[in-house]
Length: 270
Image (tube, rainbow, N blue to C red; front, side, top):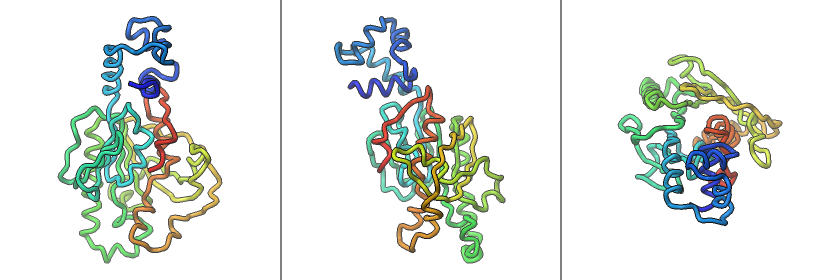
């Protein structure tokens, strides 16, 4: 366990001032922990193992219908095992502590873990109000597929007994399920980025539960306007429009990670 990993792990376990709590937990002097932290003394194997076991107890992070992995990147440090599941992933691929899994949620069961938080982004193509003029062409099959995926996401979220959120733009889900618990624009959280970013609007709805904490806003001026709606047609237009804004992802991490955990901005870009 290198010094950076030790610091990150213990911040999440015990908070920013972690040396004294860790010393108390291990039954050693704080000065001993300080020597481990600054590299003056090697951390013994039994102490490293205790920290590793405590880290695993914090839980995993699960993100459903997630192709980019943006939402879990702030969590993708040594303390959280992250899973991103989407039918468009090919097989199983590892990227650091993020595992990308290609699977159909209608036939897939989550790995047996204690989950710290669960996210879900069911496809909005057949239910987004912005495409309402094509609803009749898509027919009942399109609506049924969208509702089935939403139900699969809701079922897994509630099964996890962890804080959870399901994201969608303004859509027919409000009519077929219930009204969203929260709405936001990406620019509402652009101030979490360094330098500030996400300076655009795109009304997004969240259905939440399990103790999910909606993060406080740090808004920036939406100088880019509604850029997502103005994107020219392309093969990946739908994917780009549905990408999770990194400001919101970071804000959600800071509001819901245990003990005021911090993350490196190096994790925030694919």
